Image 1: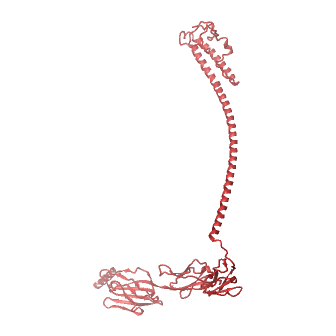
Image 2 (image 1 turned 120 degrees about the vertical axis):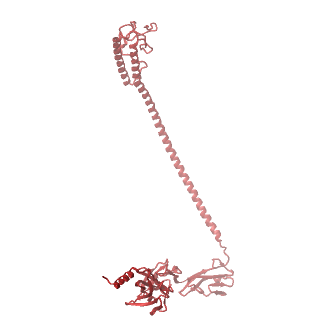
Image 3 (image 1 turned 90 degrees about the horizontal axis):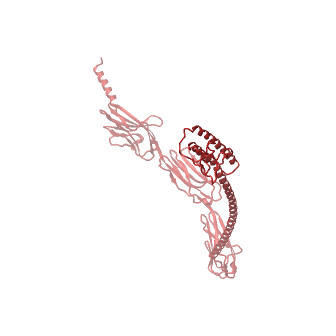
Length: 518
């Protein structure tokens, strides 16, 4: 059995391992970035459990070559102590390090970079540690060196931008100039950027800014610069209007010049001799202090000079004996405008005439074509009318020819049916009964008259059947003759024709011999 002291030891160990605190901050494997010469906060907050007590807090930093160096220590009863190179540079964020053990580095240095350990000593659980890494950045130190260039020089560097920082910065140029960029990085981490181009006077004063990019900055830092291109003067003599005459007063010549830098030195001379008397040189102006004479004619020259070089301009002056009125510019302008307007009007008139003639010719051509089309349409219409008339005639004839046999056949059938129903007559002239007795009355078409009397019908049925057969033969003969008449394109007769064999059997009447009555 286990002794009583052994049981107590086991219970104590179980209690120690069951009662454990935890770090609220920093999170595991935390990496911090700080900037040199600024304060840095190293977080450390430990939350104890019930029955735990923090008795001491220690901060350590790992040396670059290995091992640890103590930064600061704090005891719950003896206070805190700063050690080594951190003495006077660090302090706890909270007055009571046992509550909040965060460490503040007042002015961070590059040498402060490394891995830090926060150690919490508790009772009765023991020590707890949490590590974090610190990276120290430095603010970029940048310089921009512009170069004065001269027009006509070869391809060369126009500006240089240098910057030093941790980590090394990135440099770029903001410009519309056409040039080439070359970047270099030294062993100490300094970065240099060179912008080269071929200088032209049109590039003078153009923007050539250097941009510095670094993680310690929210946006790139701009270093403004304007390209400087020096070029010679370009003088021009003004004041002579071409109408200087004898006796003219208060005239002068002025020498205007560009260039970079602006020329400040102007020299006047006359090409064919010295300057006339009583002429005053005042910087870039030549003043005639007396009335003009014929001897003042000649070629006058002005030399403008700056730090780059000197340039010369000249003008030839002619003094006339009398004033030559100059046509005002407004008059010349009006003349030019009038000529241009006249040309435009003539051009428009010609265009309108040509277009009118073109449209008239086109309309005549269209009218001729329309007339021809109308004649063709009229001819086709007449032909179509003839065809339609012929077609209508043929159609009516064919319809009559087609319907006539049907009408005749229907009439004959009606007659046959009436023959079977009429009473027998005793007239000897009738042959429709098959030559067996007298004839009967006929209508205006020569058909037997219809009667509704049914007397003696049963006694005469055999005789009526014979009469029907004979009548049917006559109808078939009539239809055959009618078909032959249609084939010969003859109009149908108004009255049905009687077969040749049956004519002798049909009764003939005259006005003096009316048909007998039944």
